[in-house]
Length: 480
Image (tube, rainbow, N blue to C red; front, side, top):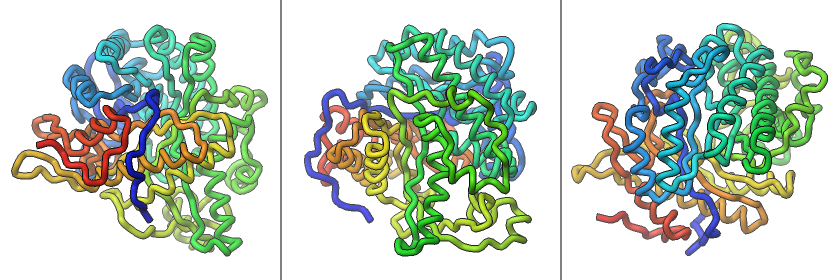
């Protein structure tokens, strides 16, 4: 259920307004200036993996259009731009020599952002693992975390004088479970034990990245980690079985990342739930002291909520497809979890629209970790945008989605949550992973034939929000 947004909601003057992107989704130029393939290059070129055979070979051609794109950011009035570094552009094989041309690209990008008055918010890793490291085992093997430590140290040292906010990872849940259990993301493996090993090695790599930030920059930097935390609700709130299904998914999807970083442990119930899959021997003595970094700010990505119930799985189906009816979780325990359809309305992704989940998540984090600053690092919606005869993209559904979710952030702040900023996903339409170019999240439309950028009505709406720090009225009208 959605509710009307609060009238004339104002945000503090120091609240950070930004937009977010990811390297493989927008850059293109995948074989230029020394860049070598990532796991997403390989995955996208594998027949049947990505809608319509789309790839990020050109994507939005941001690599050649950074000046144009920064011009749009400046016109939007953004305080900050959240982007990711492409590891295979900076260190093509994930080990050994670093690529001067790759480092120089981000040098220019950062300098140009600062010249435009826009703070760079840098994510070290947003899913584009160098293919050479996947060939050596990928995130399920410990050496990948050690290679990340070298890479993190290099990029922090290179950009130390200009980047204040450093995020180690974006949504490691997706890297681990969609990449190594469900096979729905690169590298496309369906190996439950490998997925759990990947969880730990991603957490370990975060620890190494955090060490690079803190040892190099100390108090001059803001250390962050971005998680896509699940808001999971029981189908029947009175059912002990459904409530336990919620607990199980919460351990698997949320606490498996929060607790190693913020509490220095793995959840006991997670280890028990997965005992038939792995013995967790990949966690070595001293590892949790490395993962237990704390954070200066926790990045929160939110799009929708989930509803679950307990069921007894069809074991033959589980054996056949590796994950059964639940996608990423059926293999976790003898009793599996079913994710149920959510009532509408829905976005073009099929995700339900429920801004109350944003408030619920932020308030929960505030109560669990009081004193931990939060930042919404992704929030947005894909809709079937149409170019009107006037050449404009009128997207009232996206404006309504953004308005209600920004208000939900304000409601969480009213309840005491220390939320420092909001980044819309995304600055522009882009390569939407396995959906290819069939889903449009941007507030700027990209014509994939001409690569022309066009402001949607939602871009004008966001510009007004940023300029006034006040939520526009429900009857807001785009300028002619």
